[in-house]
Amino acid sequence: AAVRGGHAVGRGDRRAAAAAGWTAIGAAAAFMGAAAIVFWFAPRGLASAFSEDPAVVAAGVVLLRLAALFQLFDGASAVTIGSLRGLGHTREAAFATLAAYWVFGLPLGTWLAFARQWGVAGLWLGLTLGLVALALGTLLLWLRASRRAGA
Image (cartoon, rainbow, N blue to C red; front, side, top):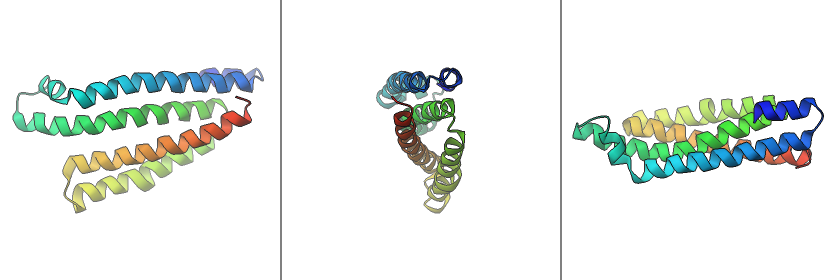
């Protein structure tokens, strides 16, 4: 998205840049959605492929379910950030990432992990919620930017 969008902007075709972004967002949503379905519905089988220890498998099941959500929003945020960069909106993407991870997700995850004693699941939940905020925020930025580009 960043490269194709950047090339299109370079040749003065902002509409093609927006189209490249939307194409990448759709492709990422399909791929990450498929991965999330596997993580959500087959976590025990996936965790069992790496360990026979019941405690490890049980922890893996919980973390893979969180990873299912993480997958969706990680893909969405990564591609919308790339799409924004392609249109030249690098500053907004950087600030959104900084706020979502360092101001919201990591402090929340640390609090859940240690103050609430949720352990690794709390840390991952906080980071996942930060990623949800990033994905939604960058998608809103992308909607505005792509409209301005004529898409």
